[in-house]
Length: 267
Length: 267
Image (cartoon, rainbow over the protein chains, first blue to last red):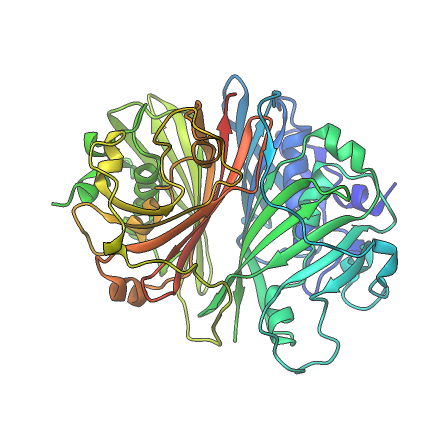
């Protein structure tokens, strides 16, 4: 079993909740990688017997640092329409809400479609060196990241950059075919914009994360386990909070998802 | 009383819920303008006796078309930390959830801060003609909108555009000092990107809307009731759903909020 699938394994309990556990493979500085937490919440709705369609939107509010160990997810279909379904979710640990989430699923139909944004020009993935395994916290080794710009600061307190943009090729490590849950996790796989901009580590934590899925299942299947293009940048750092806008592109230039987050920082 | 304040007036009920009612001043094609719905949900948390700090993030999921008339908002502080507070909200009409929402509030502190995105160059507001009052549905007359680009299609089925960008000066009509709730509504005041791109009207509805507040109360106070700069664009239109990324800038070039939404369309 792939470590990602192991990390997001949920067991349906008698009370209707799903039980999961944090995975040492995706350990962060404190507690687990937020991407697997987001993916576990999405997975609960994916596995729910009432679910219709594919995910369109996912918002996760990180209310507290998760502790390593078990957690329960409550998952409630708030409203089901003809083609859309709204979900409300809570991740509970030690009797308290550690994360809340909402998700929208939908049955998509063929309509007039058109791209608008375009991906940046990128060199081929194989021409960029992957970030060495063991370079950072544990979850980072579960991705193969090849930075064109905006990687981790190599030297602490090196000169501040004038922008926080990252462009990278990224895939699960070991390789794993892309699906909605792994895409949800990928959207949170960018190093904090403030590390990139300031070229140093400061205490921070994502407060709220929203992902829109532009890809349907067929498009994800076509991407398979090849690296996707990730782009991320902040718009503003101000009095304890900065945002991040991220895009995940297929290797043939289609927008698979875009994601925004707002992040707390301490100094 | 300003029509906006009237539209978002809530009354605390004995059961702890807030009761509001849709306002004819902000009527949309069907039901009320989504911006006032979002603002009413934020207002419920603002008015709650347990609230700490100012809004940082707001996500509203529009689960069904609101009917004109009364609605109730349930508003629960999910978790309160030292400096952040997470809220879960539901807007209920006729016993069913018509919208769900989450909000994050925080006590901000002075920290290292830096802008990153920059606003587009714009001509002064007074040099652009305002959209005539009565040009569209009722809520539109509650804003003074001056488009530099990307206004409403003048002729149905005129030539499709190759992008959906809007740049406009906008303020409440009549003028009203900016605050968090009016800023939340402004973030939903852009005409649907698909109208701008395709230069025609198609059936559509916002499914989920997320707003990040970069401004604190002092910055909003400084802006007063002068027009703010609004910028919006879609990244992708695909099989029934498109996104919109929007920014609201102060007239001296500071990012007050950025907002994203995912929107259903039918054809």
